[in-house]
Length: 568
Image 1 (tube, one colour):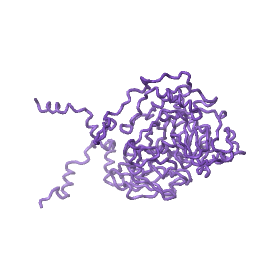
Image 2 (tube, helix red, strand yellow):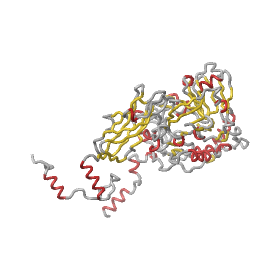
Image 3 (tube, one colour):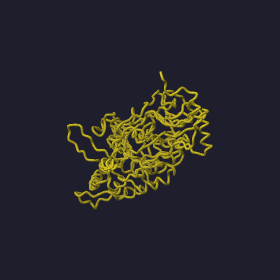
Image 4 (tube, helix red, strand yellow):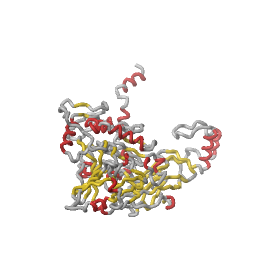
């Protein structure tokens, strides 16, 4: 047998993708390596077989009389769950009749190169399995996205819609245009008629009542307030954490947010503090206010409305706004029309859209979004041991910043300075006081001039531009960090802020670029040669297609140098 044939036969038994598995390039397909004395299933991970819901073989008969109807005239897409435990139970039983495909794997596998990046198949199927008023919600919501958002939006999740603007547009203006403001929805987009709307205030208030939109807009009852507020999703820059270590894959799908899950707008409405006062104030030890959103939310096979809470101390400080305008225009439906909460300095999840109820309560809400999600775990907690009470409920956002240009792994040709742009933000009523940029991975820092930063505001970001010295060439790492007015700053590495829920990527933002300093004579000469030969410089990994030195020039160079090796 020939040697080549024998070699091929010896290796033919290996799977063709063995190397990919060995090197961790397809970790979603890796099995479990058990080195303990505990007997555990070693089955390979489940892979989605279809995008359809399957009726379970042991499914109970459906209750044909149970119909999820529109709740109120003029409130399309709204179903009230919190007032009807019996309805919740019937929906839970209907939901349990089906087996749904597993969520998409984009942490241990490649992120799809599509826009939308992820479809949200399971959430669509969940709505359709309940049926009735929820059947068309996914399609109606997507139509609303196409109507109200900028055509260049990056659609990270089609349903429930999660989208951010491209970097090239995010900091083009200090106040984010409505169509470019990021969206992080937790359900469908209700279509509520402003004339049919009312806000219910109940619980531990002295005078429970309902207020129409006209009531709230009546300046004889409530002083009108406008505030410039930055809203930031706790998942901003999540992709950096995913690239470091995979983390929790929630039912909701923790979208692979980049640096654009942040936006700044002028919100107009009334202070929730004034509305509570109009209701006679709080009673009976009330210390928190539950905020109810009209969308349908799913958790653990149950249907519910979107509910979170904020402490009364936050409301009393005048930092919770009930808004009906965004940048001088009526709220877009995708952003919560007719009414939404704007909780200044808190994570975006507390700024409830399609707000229809405010309930005064004694303790923090036990609703799942507040008590079981948006939790910041210590790094040793994960799938093997996590419990919701072990995580910190995320409220105020820490100081953070990000580079918008250049982009990661770009080739930057410059004259000794690299132009860098970005944003900086700190939550809780703190603001960016100083922004610093480094071109050498964080050893030497250069302060961004004050005149190159947008104006200070208590609850808003600052956009900035900088010209950063960079004499060195080859791969360089740009880093940004922010100091707020309390002198809080950012962890240096993403590893330091990584957590199982992949929330709050507050570490210094790092962007690797290939530095080409055209102020250096040798570099300028080489760049001119590329132009003269009409050969592109990119990609940098491609061998140069022309001879940049003759044999004679090579010999002449060596004649002026010491030899490679020496005799003694």
